[in-house]
Length: 189
Image (cartoon, rainbow, N blue to C red; front, top):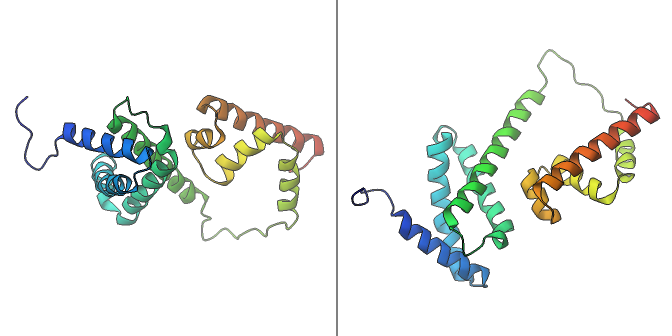
């Protein structure tokens, strides 16, 4: 195996340092948390460049880093100090980057071609949608709001709702089926 290569950080030292800082941060140490987040910003940027070709688009790279850091901030309480930090960290980063790539792809496909005229919005459509949404069970409504309106991934929505990812996926599916059924029953478009 040999000695660590120059210009490559020693991952064992990183793991120990990051784990110690995160454990301290979970115990309320703001200084450790600040150090951790500053160092992770650089590590996340390098990871995204290497794995997703982020060097081509500076804005996308910056979005990935910021989204990953925000997610880490929101879910920092889920890290178990008895487990390695790096796999937990980079799993979160991978999921955030993939979510951003998906959103970007959706935005591109939703754009109207120049020759197609824009449709006028029905001012009552939003009220009708809100009325239908209000008829859902609270758990189903929460699942739809988190995933479809606020744009959280299933994993993030599950964490926010305090349920498993599988349960969140089921709630979203059932909510959509319930809405489709009600739309058919009311003969709405």
